[in-house]
Length: 254
Image 1 (cartoon, rainbow, N blue to C red):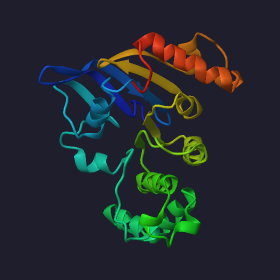
Image 2: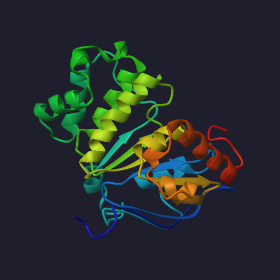
Image 3: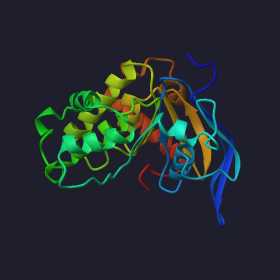
């Protein structure tokens, strides 16, 4: 196992004209750790995630992935990252299998890996279906499958279950919980669902106005030294909601 964190963010700042999107955030994410990044709209989540992805550059501070910066290491780092966004567009007239074959070709992966992903994403019965005919949940499972094609060490998910019904949401959770057991991939998840953060993530970071307000495990955040699975579900979600409102003065979707 690497001695350094998988993701290390050191005093990062980013502004857009007069808007301070990120103001001195420092974070460290270890191998296999699943982290929820929570914050109301405009909190700075997207900007922070885009800097981790290499889309945006910090005005100040450093971001290290696997001990390396984006500068001079982009081709190598791109092979280690998987991305799944809230709305992912595909070619409607390709089948699920054809879509996966297309994306697999970008990583020089063979058809065996495509078949593995079809199984992992639970898309066996839809492998010959055109993308245009998939439901919202099936599209998101396809998007997640594509993000996992290259067996990434860093997985970044931006609100992957927004708009999905409870059953479709739990199908996504099932895939991610199975991935978590392998303890190889580190994940950053942005979500508007408190229950999702509780179920999937080891560590929760609450940000607003470009700053980290609080971070820790669920018991640490709630001041309870107990296993979060021992907190009845009907109380866990309400308590985390209350904590978020207490910290930010807003609901998560404000």
